[in-house]
Length: 209
Length: 151
Image (cartoon, rainbow over all chains, first blue to last red; front, side, top):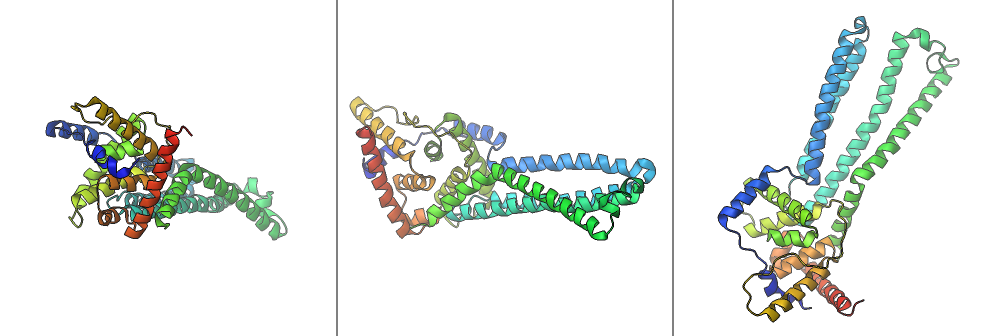
């Protein structure tokens, strides 16, 4: 089979479309939702934002008003986490917007796509893992302050000598952080690993002589 | 041109439709940013190929036994038509076994794009493109021979 001989057959494949039919078809297509991976990721992120806004608002309001206002510190903590989530949402959305520019040269587009996706995944991982020690520290402090009866005999709050308490916290933090880290690594690989490896492979192929 | 890209990158009808829709959406979104720095066709090829290649959803790979619809109507010579159809079927079968980038290069070659324009679309330098093109031709020859001899 000679490719040059096939050029004529190939050119004959252009299907004539009437202007009216073309317009109608395009209007129908544009009215549907995009099913591309980035568009789906953006939709998921938007849902995540809505879910977080609703649930955080409910929980924060509850902690501000319930328990005779004694657990307002929990509400303040959740408010700070909520604000951090907005920054997280903004950053992720920005990265996804960067990935949606498709008018560049194919090689540069794919390079940018894979680099941005890797940054996106690293950011996702870092944000998820960093939350664990922060939450542990905060809730440890809340328990210590609010329910002293429950904590007075606990190794986490009043062990003698002091290094036992520090050691217990360190062990708990390292264990939980590691678990969350490996669970996130697994999840992210399941969600984006195949896509990243495939893109990386294509970029390498394009650079090879 | 968009149909051809979809035919090359997708084997299933619903996949072709999804990709076609995706390309149209991307063209629509990107159009306000078109500054005329490159030819309109170059810009369109970039968007179509970028969308097709980076939209790598998990697809089931099928060995194709038929080519997508496409031969023009009104060909009087049935024997000639049959011959063309066979060749086209063979071409699609062989192309389906190429990598995503090789498919793009073959398509641009069949579309009679110059190496200059191919470089502008793909971002691969011309020497590299020529080397790749020769390799692809060899590969296609081997693939079609393998089909002819049933191996």
